[in-house]
Image (tube, rainbow, N blue to C red; front, side, top):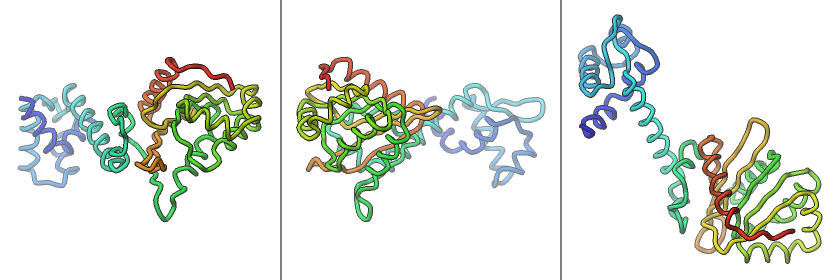
Length: 254
């Protein structure tokens, strides 16, 4: 039965989508679908046979099962589209199992490659500038003055910033920024440390807007690209990952 349902959903998804939107008479279906009457009839029969469509007084409508099946397929297709676009970066993740599927649907991919290798970091800076609050996780130095950038955003622009670093990254940051860190702490910057992080991560928040970010590094520890996603599910997933790591991290007052 599941195989029949999946096969029918794949073959008749366009027809089902019309009936999910609103009940339609057969004549209205013929006007909207680029197919012969016999093809539409077969499609309706197939959908009825697996319980996705039912007859109404004026024609046909999606059942509750039909609506849920259509929504499930749309979500699945969106996730597969994300895998297709982000695949080369996903394959670089050492602990790819920790990357949630929530990050896939609607993902936007910025790769650090010619002709614009700096494009991912420029977009990341734009995301942070737009944020009133930013949660981050990092095990790598991007090597592009991000320490100074964060200092300026916190001290001069009032960014509410919290970070989970690996111990090595925290020591590197303290060595590079030196006496610039205490003013960041006085402005509200919070940091803590763990032994290991699966990837770089960020979550930016502002009024009526939020963005989830995953930074992916290649074998040479150079930035390979960044995934961006504004979908609420992606933001919720990224926030949960940050909360989970920060909850077991060791506080390191700036």
